[in-house]
Length: 323
Image (cartoon, rainbow, N blue to C red):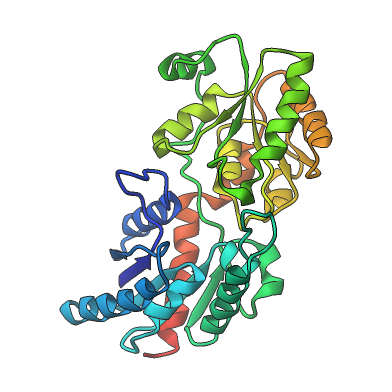
């Protein structure tokens, strides 16, 4: 089976963490025996780029025989469907179905338009994948497959060694925030306010924003930290939560995406409200945890090999529908 992956989310030297979950899926499919080529484009600057990507896709299809086009993110279904040589599988990741939050904290008109277009594109592709069950109410007839977690990269390791490698203070209590603080949807303001509350009680508590690190460095930060906090307005299936669980790192998160399902029953992990006082209260409990969590066992079912097998099953269904 030959697959052409079309995506506007993929790591670059300038943005090494951007779209790593797509890159990991590509590698896991290759490891499963699927021939995969990747076509990337810049989707952030203009919708016109999506149309141009359609031309680049058609040109690539003329140079080789592919069985499937797999597009990541709802709007990428547009350039993917500007051809009818191959069936199209479209994966929705979150904001393409849930909307985009602007600088004012409100869902933007542009985001609402993108949601409508993304949903419409779902009607003209062969198969749809969503990354969390909660998204099912927003899209009909879709298969739930979370983006997989790299259990080899994200695993429990020595905290002192990780801190030494990163140059972090061995005595401080670090709360990890894996997102750009300027991304309004991630609500760094809530997490930061919660840490100020805790720091007034214990000056050793510090928030650690990480957003320009490589994936390997993020794994080190997971092992170096005392807890992960997630306060987003919305998420699809946040990879950082699954990676923290794989590292046996306590998680405090708002109820978004599939977080409730992932941390349910995990020692040292807590849901919280989008309120600094409640975030602080739950972090206070997480920071008191004596030893690691048992989160790793809760994410073994969504390892990269397992999610690759599920994705191949979707490809097979798409091929069964004919070209």
